Length: 65
Image (cartoon, rainbow, N blue to C red; front, side, top):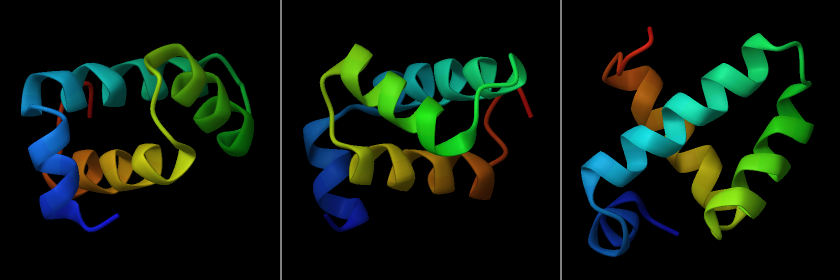
């Protein structure tokens, strides 16, 4: 899913919420792949969407970075 389609489906505050949850999960020593699966399930999005959100958060240095 291209980034612009993700932006249309999920508003930025929601994407930031997902990114924060992902970072917090990984900070608890959950592996990257497992944390993506857990957060995707929790927020009802695909793992591919999680990857896009993760990259967007890293690119824009969203909190908690």
